[in-house]
Image (cartoon, rainbow, N blue to C red; front, side):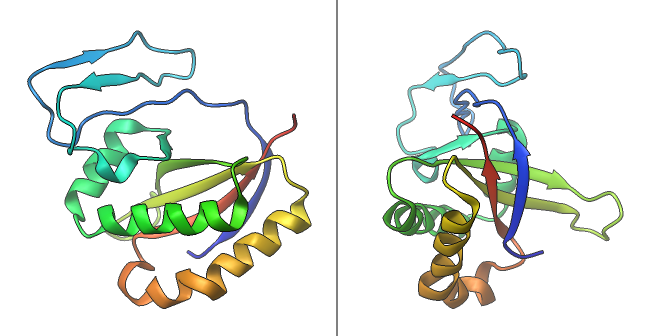
Length: 154
């Protein structure tokens, strides 16, 4: 799997931030209509990688990243590069996608870049991201993370 484009219109997601280390003091908000929940914790460093990201399936995303600790710094760096290229408008949503037909491991982390940009403009930014930054990282992280475009209408 590599960077790909999705032409599906999604409704905006709510922010859901669980703690990786499952701190003792956590307050979950009620479930939203899409099944996500937000969490407030006393642990400041447990989610440093999540700054700037929303989590579509929070528990799965946290567990996946906990099993690949090297992803934390990669996600922080990729967020900075994505923000540089895409600007302030897009939202970056982490999601675990399971492929039941793939041999183990069959879980894949997607960074969904949710934007209302024209398709051609968003594709140009994603291609620039590949050329400027991601292709230099692909040997280390190519099997762990995929970048995807999601489009929505304003």
